[in-house]
Length: 386
Image 1 (tube, rainbow, N blue to C red):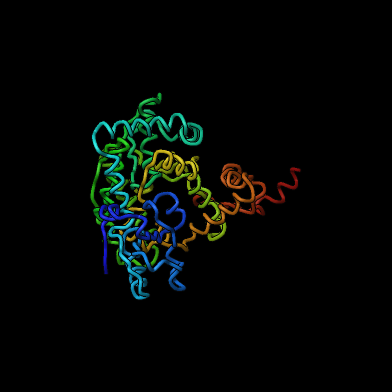
Image 2 (cartoon, rainbow, N blue to C red):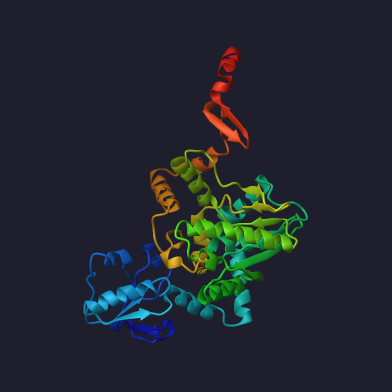
């Protein structure tokens, strides 16, 4: 099978070749190789789409692995096909290297990104960040917060917001920008570090072997990985003298969780803006992006021409919740909420408000720790009081 590096692909005349990006349409539209056409991988399931046989075909996927499958199909059908080594990850590395030329380039880009938060995205991002911190009392004077960075858009934005708040806010607190390397492949790890340089985020890094541990798990590996990662983050943050860890869950994560609880667990619950740790005494988890919508995070990312890996997981290509597939319950909720948005511009906000405004007189039952309540418990008493 023939293969080519991204840097060598740029040397070819785009008019004499066809570049096929087999990633999802949304990812293709956000960033791809110039002159590439989008034919999502599922389109190849029922045979080869109509492609010009006169031109060599170069295939791009997320990591350079699934594109190998398509290249084999094309070769069997008689096409001159070549795999793009490293896939989109290699494209990201190349683009970052083109931006990061000198220290002055980096510093100017960092300033642009910071200005965008306070000016262009003041209302949808900065104001909602500070509102969540105030409304849910997420930060107190003297806190030392471990800002947990995975390498994606959400945690990177959270880090920049915390930096700005520390510089310009009234409450004194300390920050540690904590990154756990659970076994990232070198490509993903380089991208995380390059983006941190571009954003001006000083990383504190520690290693773990979580990816090796979950490698053989067939059922819910992402859930197990997330649980283990949180435990490691709590433990390491506490060893650094932190009393809080901050995670990058946003508004969409909150309302998706509400719907999943109702539709799949038969209960009303949500992702809380802050939690005391049950296993690490004195530690607390906070979610400062709680009120910020994902579409606004994406808009900030795209406005600043930033490119983050969707998930640094070693198994991204095969993981439905990490960008390489479909079918998870959270994916279903995303699609359902997208339908709601087409129907009305108030539904998603009302889902969010619903867990802030529960009328206990109009629910059948509830429970809190060991306490449970059913409306029949005081039904007759309520009647006598009317």
